[in-house]
Length: 575
Image (cartoon, rainbow, N blue to C red; front, top):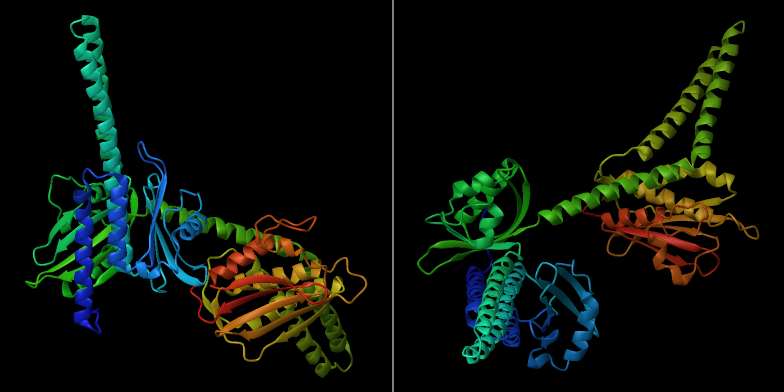
């Protein structure tokens, strides 16, 4: 599909600026050669402010040779009254936290009276060197090109700081060596033993220097992101050293499209071909994931971001970055599997407590079937047979049979362990089915259930069974909260209504004992419970389900006794 640009000239200028900025970033390590870390940071801050039009940029260095940890923040002169450096440092330290596993953060946050977009990028896999934070009041920050520039700037800064650290180490070793040589030279005439010791010391220093050089080579592997360029007219491809490692190719041999294709997972070849075809026909920005199948059978997940530039002579070239996100992808899959298992366990636990209610729901129509069948037989044995009465009794038998079948169908759906299914869901119908399943238990607990279901409730997109699990959890929690109430009616109100921004809202209001306002945040934490026999996973799983539907679940105390638990879901969810 060919991308139609509304303002081609402006877009080309923007891309040209971007590539110029990219070239500038790639030349920074050469400019930084021999500089101190503070000089590198100053140049980096000036470059990022100019390239990304930021409101502020911040760098924290934590691991340097012969230097203490430092923080540097740069704010344009026009923003100095709005963003004060000391306040920025305090806010960003709190926002970043101390978890080095947080590789990449991006969110919209409030800084004083201003709302800013924050992006952080670690210097090192686990922030061994430090971290960069860029801030802008623009809601669309960062764009794809800005994120790419920021990631490359972080990688270049990492290289420069690693080189500065190595140079500092080399200088320290060299200084020590020079001092040792001068001292030993002055003592040469005094004793041959001193000379022997000097030679041994020099050998140890040389070994230390070799270890430092090896450390620099290993440091270049810390970033799992490699860069590439592809000239469309000649199919000439240039890989960075790290990209050779990612694809496991010979760095001494030229890279070809055939070599790349031999590494791509067979199921992703069509996607790569589609992206390459788009790149050949126009200037495009690309952001996609593919998999590699390595010769030893391992599968790697790669994230690719690239954009095309048109040179003055008409040549089209694509430049981009590829990141190995295998560990992140595998962790996400494991987390998703664990979440599914926990959701099913919570569902089975909840329904286990409804066993008596379910048995009552099934026994009622079954008893009716037996009674109606006996009545029908008696009517047929009369002389003459009461055919019309027997026919009506048979109809009631069929009706009761359907009632029992409906209960079993609803029960099987809620007990089933299936993958998430996105469909159009009428929240009112889903609520009525849950009420029918749990009504006997509620009545057994002397709960008066009222329902107020809105007529104009919009359809939502989601998993019907999972949403019914949430409704069932809220009904049972509301009922349980009133077990010790004896001085007022045990009233439970379930209501649906159209919420703002075209969202569907469901709330369950009880007249129970409420909860401690100070423990509001703990209510939805896993394994936190106020029940003696509770597991503490119902509300946690419920919130996970609602957030998976792009919704929100919360609790509030009533003006009178009890509490209200509510959730809202957009009509068009990305489940």
